[in-house]
Structure formats: C-alpha cells, structure tokens
Length: 347
Image (cartoon, rainbow, N blue to C red; front, side, top):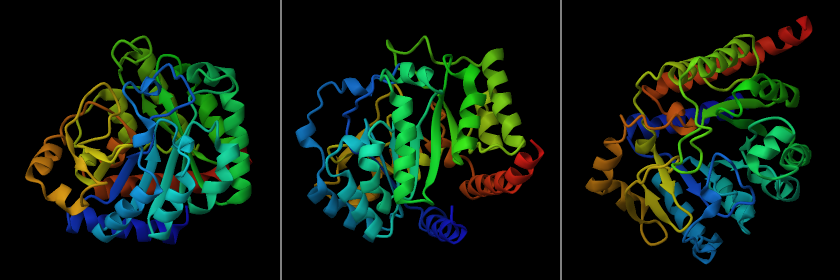
C-alpha cells in the first residue's frame, strides 16, 4: 500500500470518526446473487430476493454523490458475488472519481473475466480463499473455484500491477488444519491474508463453526507464530488474542460503517451471521444526513458497541480505540514488509 495514500486516508477517516463523529465507510451488499454454494454461508439461497430491485448505476449516482458530500471516504462492495452485478465496473468508477477508496470482496471465479474492467477503479481486492486447491473448491461448492481465482489474480494484476490484495480466509473445523498452506500461498502470491472465524447460520453450518477448544487455539497460535516470523498475516496480534481467548471488546463498526443493502435499505449493522438487525430508511429515496441524524438510528448503533456477537474483519478493524487499532495494524504490516527480505534470504 502506498504510504502517502494510506496516511491521507487515515487522516480523513480520523477526522470523521474522532472529530466529527460521523460514518466514513459505506459497506454495500450490491447483490445477493452468487455462483458458489459455500458450506459456511447460505446467502446464495436469497429467499424472497428480486434482482430487479437491485440498485443500478443511476441509483448509485445519487447515493454516492450524497455520500461524498457527507464526507464518506471508503466504498466497499460485497454480496453475494459482487462481480455478478452488471454495472459493478461503472459504480466503482464513479466512487473512485469521487475520491473514495474502493474495495471489492469476491470469490474470484469471475475475476479473470471482469477483473480488467474494475481494476482501474479498485483500491483493494479482498479475495475469499478458504483453503488450497480442491479443498477450497469443496468448501465453495464450485469445482475449479481455486484455479479460477488464481487466474483472476494474474489477470487483474496485468491491468494494475500495484493493486493491493488480501485473501480473506474462513477459520472453521474444515480449515483449521490448513492455515499454514493458506499463509504460504499468500506469501508466494505476495499478498496479505486475514483470517475470519466462521459465524453460525442455524440449521446450515453447525458442523463447521469452531469451538474455542485446544485445536482451535492451536490454529490461532500457529497463525500468530507465522505472523511473528514475518509472514503476511494481516490480523493484528490483539485480534488473534480476541479470537483465542474470547476477550470482550468495544465494536465501533456500527457507529462508523453504513450497511447499505442491495435495494437501498440500511441496516444498523452488516448481517454477518444468523441475527436480524433493524432497518432504517432507504438511501435511494433519502439523504445520508437524515439517516444518521435520526435519534432511533443513533441509539440503535450505539447500543451495538458491546454486542460481541461476531469476530468479523469489520469489527476487528474498528475495535476499542480506533486510533490505536489502526496504528497497530500499520506498524505490524510494516514489520512484515521489513522482515520479508531477511526471512526469504535465510530460508
């Protein structure tokens, strides 16, 4: 990541969170459509979902211009599979033109096809990789998913050589034994990897959700050990300790992240697991300023800071004192970069 861009973004974000006390980040689940049938996630079922109601480019013109005026600095897409949205490239280009830092979380199966279109407007690629080779394919319910993702990285890097990439990897009973393989894959690809303990979806994935037992703690220790040796693990040591010990933390994510749904509605928090949140208006029909000024919205998000129901990346990046948390991430990533050459020279 370019240091000047990182520092500029950190300053703007700090101004929004610490001075103005306003959201700076839009997390947009742009679609529920998905071409995978993951064992850990059932969002692909999309019960009652109507793709014709998805926000299109014209809808997003209004929303993103309003968000830019409000002070939003970051626009992040997920799904479903966001690359299945027909106008994802145009929407990302618009956000980028408004000086927003853009990210996309994808399973990578469409990356070879659509990656070159989104690359010019993309700041960070978040690639869902849960294992290596056929083990990954089985978890995704998509034969060939791993190879397609690897080809996708190669394709998008031809278009944008300095693109930042992070592998997002689910940590569960099926993957705990393979964390070193995923970390070494990230090292070989010259990207980062960030682990996410899998969340519970009742009636769907109980057999995979990890328990805080000896095997689980050993996998966390293995991740921490490889990170200490300079391997590209993006999880902070404090986050790994929360994973391992279940230490309570303050989650500021609902205060500073707007969870925008595919049809324009806003939730009080992103639906990462089997829990329903309150809905607040529709940004396709109203203003962001009106949303965050609503006392009901403010009271609701402030009530979620101690929920601790998930260990998502969003929660870990906004935990406790945000300034300290972000500094921790930046310093630990700088350490990994500094030791990379030494580590490879020794090995």
